[in-house]
Image (cartoon, rainbow, N blue to C red; front, side, top):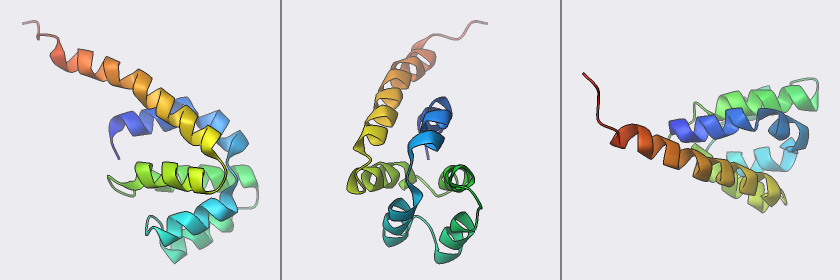
Length: 108
């Protein structure tokens, strides 16, 4: 997962915890090989929905370069497109900042 993807998750953390519905999303992420069966069971074992979402988000960040795009696709496939749209918008807002940081000359 790219740093801008992680930053998008961080900037929207409370929104994500308040809005993500875990069950169908987990099924999608398992089907796309983002999560293993053990990971899904660990997430579902959390006692509250908030804890489940938190565990899902921390786990997602360690699942490789395709995890974020598959997460967005999973949100769209499970009628949570408004969440995917918010994350995509945040990534777009972060990208110019990243490009500016890389394009500025270093001061010696």
